Structures are given as structure tokens and as C-alpha cells.
Length: 407
Image (cartoon, rainbow, N blue to C red):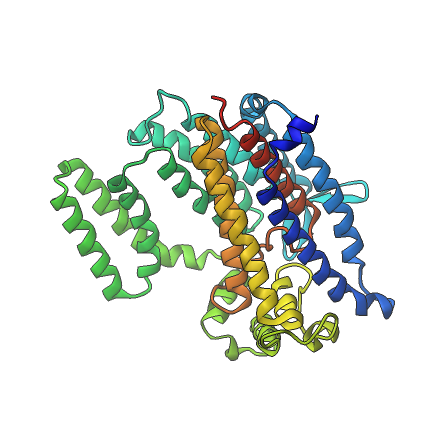
């Protein structure tokens, strides 16, 4: 038994636990005033229970044979799709969307579980020796693994979570051996979507695409297909914009200029920036933040928990959180690089991508760099579904590191 624990990656484990502890401190502060006034929920106590349960999940996964994870990948994926289908028929409303399932007193969000399930299924598929992502057949098949949960989650609607599956695909494909030239053609339609809002930017990107296709001596079929596909994507962008929910369009518009509605849709971003800015270098002190304690900061226990840390612990607290995230992510990439099993390596990259995407988008959102998306901050934001899934990811990484010399 002691020999098993000697193989434990303490750097990864303690960086994750450090983030959980930082989140618990922030949750205690944000919940304290409301609890003393007899209003609100004790998010600290609930999150502490989820953290203990998550630690149990992590160590359970750590001890199972790593081949079991590979063998159960497709079953886990199918089960996650089943849960997402249940949300459509029996889902509970949360933040304007049907995102939750409830079993007795416990509610959970299947989309969180679906992220890990999709990573496992895609990794199993592309890790096969016969699969070459540079061939269109295998690329399409692999992409279907991402598209199905993406479509079900956007249907809820939850576009922010859906975008995680788009972000997941590219690093996994790259790690699996997708050529750089094909990688460029894949990301071009996404760039076209953003450029479509500016005519000259759209023309410039189309010129770059055509020049690349001609320079790379692609066949006429490939040139024509990519040209028409990107033109179509540009023409469809206004249609896609019109089909966004009103609150989704509002978030994007407010992101560009939150001061246009300071007491409405722009209130969250403005109060978040005020909270972080008022923290200064060392912060206003634990449980001393006016934005937090006087409840000026909305959703401070979930989406904007990093603003609580910024206000009460200042630049030092913010940098501590960033350092812990950096250690965790670098360690995850290291594990992906040293494990000998191809499936394990791909899963590790997928996990790192999910945590990195959530972290970048959430922190960027709190400082007004990205639109408000509703993506929680990994390990810190309140939420049992997210924390259990994240701790399961930690357990998988620990398991793979322990078995890094096995194929």
C-alpha cells in the first residue's frame, strides 16, 4: 500500500487541493454575511462536502486499473448522452435554461460530466493505430463525438458550455497527429465567423485562405470546397446571430461596452472590475471586501468568485490562484508527454484543455476581457457537478502518472 502512495504525483494533487482550498476560503467569505443575516445559503459548507466527496472520487479512480478507463470509455460517453437527453425532457430551469436533473434533494448538471465522457470516447477512437485524422473519413467520425453533446447542450440552451467542446477538439487533434496544414484549414471557418462582422477583415482572411490553398498546391476539389465552405460560413454568421437567444446577444453587446447599461446587463462586469480594482496589492482583508460583504457583486459564489479573491486578497491572492493553475496545467501537460500509453496521453491533453479553457474564459470574464458566459472557475466556483467532475479528472491524471511506464 505504501508503495502505491509513493507513485502519487504530489505536485498535481497539492496544486488541485490548493485551488479547492482557495475556493473554500472565498466561499466562506461570500456566504458569511448572508448567513449571519439569516438569508442566503451556506455555500461554504455544501462545497466542503462536495470537496470531500470529490477527493474520494479522485482516490477511487487512482486505485483502479488504468485499462478499465479505456475499456469503459464508450459506455461512459453513451451514458452521458443519455443524461443530456433526459435534460431535454425532464430538465430543471437554471439561469434561463434547462440544465439540471434532480434526483430527490440532489441536483446535478449532466453537461459537466459530458466533458470528461467526450474526452474519453474521442481519445479511445483516435488512439487506434488504424485511425488517421488527416483522412477525411476519420476526421469526420472523430468530430461527431464532439458534435453530438455540443448540439444537445446548445439546445438547452447553454452556448458557453457548448463552446468547451469546440475548444476541446483542436488540441486533441493536434496531439493525435493532425498535420499543421490541415489544422489551419480547420480553424479558418472559426476565424471567418468573427471576421464576418467587418467586411474588410472578411476579405483579408479570404485572400489569405486562397493564397495558402494555391501555395500549398492543393487539388482543385480541396480549393473549391474550402473556398465555398468559408464563404458560406461568412454568409451564415448574420443568420446565426439572429438565432441567438436575446440574453446571449445582450451579453456580447454588453461585453463590447458595459457602460451602456450600467444598472442592467452591464452591472455584473462593472461590479466585478470594481471589486478586483479595489483590492490593490494585498487586498482589503479577509471578509472585509465591500463589494462582497454588501452583496454588490452578483453571482460571487459561482461565475465571479475570482473577483472575491481579487478584492479581499488583492494582487497577491490573484497571483497565488494563477500560480496554482499554472502548476496544475503544466503538470498535466508533463503527464501527457511522459505516459507511454497513447490513449492516456490524449485523455491528459483533453483534461488540461478543459481546465485551461474554463480558467482563461472565467478569469477573462471577471476583468471584462471576455463576455459573460456562465462557465465556472475550475476547483473554486461553487457547484457539486463541476467539482466532482474536476476531481475525477485529477484522479485520472494521478492514475495515468502512476502507470506512466505501461502501454
